[in-house]
Length: 163
Ligand SMILES: [Zn+2]
Ligand SMILES: [Zn+2]
Ligand SMILES: [Zn+2]
Image (cartoon, rainbow, N blue to C red; front, top):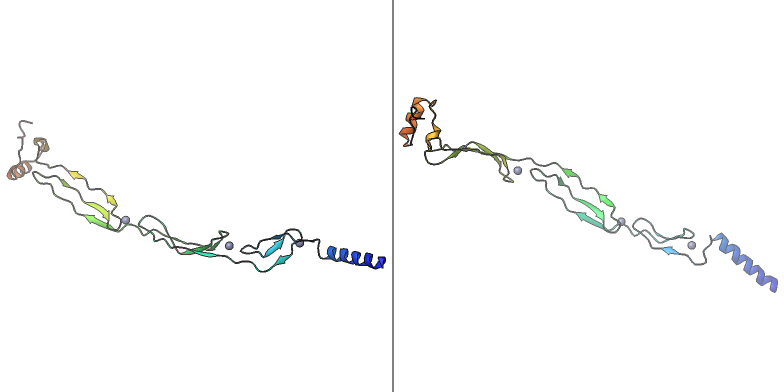
């Protein structure tokens, strides 16, 4: 009888050794891609949890900024499931801003260029000072017709001789 008990004990011990060590498994929780696993013997249990997909919304490109297509990633482990792809910037939509001719009393400006979408000034308009407003506008080198034209518009024009 004593021998029989001893046999049982031996068999149990051998069974435990064959089964790989574990008296009590140390199960690590399952992850997105791995099932629950014993850290001692590597025995697995159940199925992987699978990724928790979260959508990364698309981002429309602007005139100068790169956009992104819609993608997704796993909320739990952060793995990218669907990569977002870059969308090239659209580029500016150029609109010519017409030049303004100066008058006797109001300054004018040169032609400019701006973007009709984002409003960015692509080519700044340059101020044209009223050419007739100050006597200095006309130099002695100014042509006679130019001085006459200025006078006709009612501008004060210093005579060539005095400047
Ligand atoms: Zn184990
Ligand atoms: Zn995941
Ligand atoms: Zn623009």
